[in-house]
Length: 315
Image 1 (cartoon, rainbow, N blue to C red):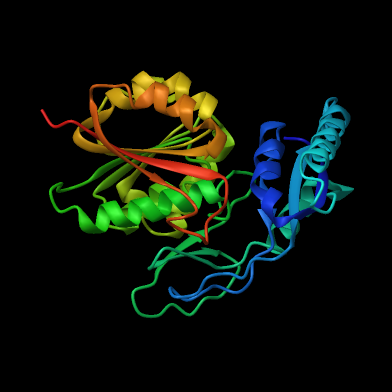
Image 2: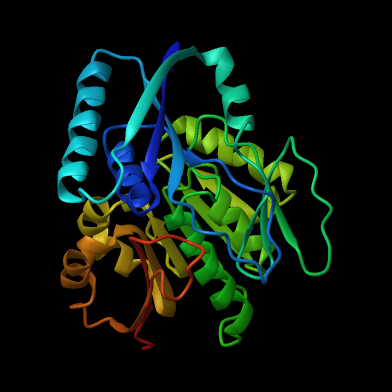
């Protein structure tokens, strides 16, 4: 684990938030975050602001200067493409490992997703009411707090599927690239019988196990530190919140581990990557229906991200 981190704070026009978030993740950031307001009610929608503050953390390794230069070139290119928008600005600060947790706590606040799900950091108080389904998360160094549009889209889709489809009993869920375990934990709290959470990052699986214990669902979740290609059993719901490039690479295997009649959620996809995903997945004779979740469906999620809900043909 790196001893030093480069904290990057970007002030950018709101329409560019998702594009810049995706770019920063691609160059190796261990999380990209926006400061959140207080948790919303199910009827609330956030107001659109002209500018947003984005925070990201890069490990201070031999490549960090090149990565920062790449980010500056990228934001400059956006300014040329969108001259009518204010130019992005950024500041940096070197922090140590011991500062990491406190940096997280400044902007990870309770967040409502969908009608009933509330993601809450372990150090915050939240008075649950009504049908609130509260998920407690301590992210540590892993990815997955529910703040990113790709995660929120998955949770929206999971809520709809698990609470409305009564044709499947004792749901078995596979969470690919689990990170903090947030999606696997949410699935069992939504009623899934069992979830398998897999990640190639040992630190992530350790954190996911701790979060499962915090939420008292560890007896219904199996957390595995290995490549998903080694998983051979099948599941009623497979959740793959990755990147378009990795999704395409795993296409055949992901389809193979979906039980006939089961669902496959694909997220982490930018709108401009839709065609590649469709060419990889929607040409499969196994998949008989799909739904694309975009901003027009859930305007509180994000502008440029896409989530596919696919269903496998029943035998």
